[in-house]
Image (cartoon, rainbow, N blue to C red; front, side):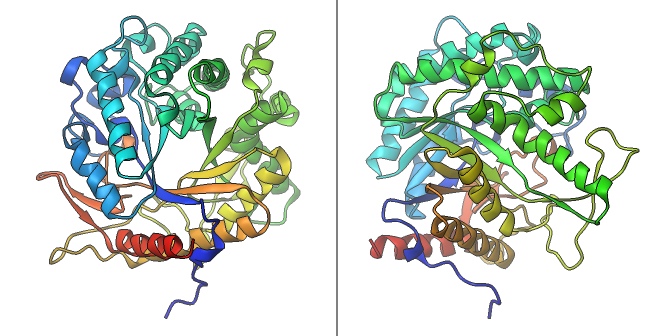
Length: 452
């Protein structure tokens, strides 16, 4: 018998939606089909030498050719919402200019299929697949990329309009900037702190420019952004560690939340980043800080850290937690952190609405006699949905939970070595097999529907 408290479906509002999330490069494949241009991830995967298994997203889950059956799979699992991303180079092959109608048609059909099956569409406009042409012209280090992104947003909104329930401009600008421009583990594979902060600022500026472009072609769709968030905890009682926790929180969380909701960068981190601060032009922060209809949060784990002066700023060394469970990504399972971040962001930043845009666990999964038994993921879902229920009870305006991911897929620098999916994918045959976690979630969603 489980020792944790199971979530109560009736703890969620009647109009609450449950579903799953994906992103274009991770599942679509078909990188040369129907006029799609190349993205910086196509180049990075093929040439960087930094993908764990040497793989690429050329085929991935072949979702581009299997979209209708995948939408039927979503429906069969009882999901009432689905988050997908629109591949910028599929719609605008060079990032700007003439629209590739066949590429845009794909997302038009996807939205129609979802609506026909009673599934609420959540669309993300940028999930890291910057058109290669724009990258070669400077990418997110170049201010003109921000305007190109706003034009892309307008193209998509003009076609999809209010059929999409919720538009997120960006997915995880922190990860785009930090992992891509500082750590070098993701495209474009650079390692420069100043570049990372400039890229972060331009990503936020692109968001700000895209918001009015989206609203010009929608009336009822919710417009927002998706941030990855991570609470930090001190692993010892030292004053240096307490300061490190504050700085790590500032770098990971407040550097993005503060400009979006308060119109300024966090002063403590800005001062600490002396010599690396981005160039911010007059009016930029007003453009970034616009009213949002909804904020999406991606949550996976916490930081359990001590101060280590030998490491770069913010000098945070992560330590394992005795007795804790970990996923195959090396991330501690810590559901309390999700409740904490939902409540904190509600209280400190007061977004009009919140939704969990990603939440999930990578585990070692295999098909045995047609089934995938993943009890650790079942427990993970139960604990994190319970955290959502607790946040709702504390007044958080939470409207959706979207699990990562609908299916196993291309996990960026980890290639195909990590399985986050609710559905197992046999990449040789492209067979999808719902895991026990998907079946548990299906039953939970059905209980919620019956309680309405």
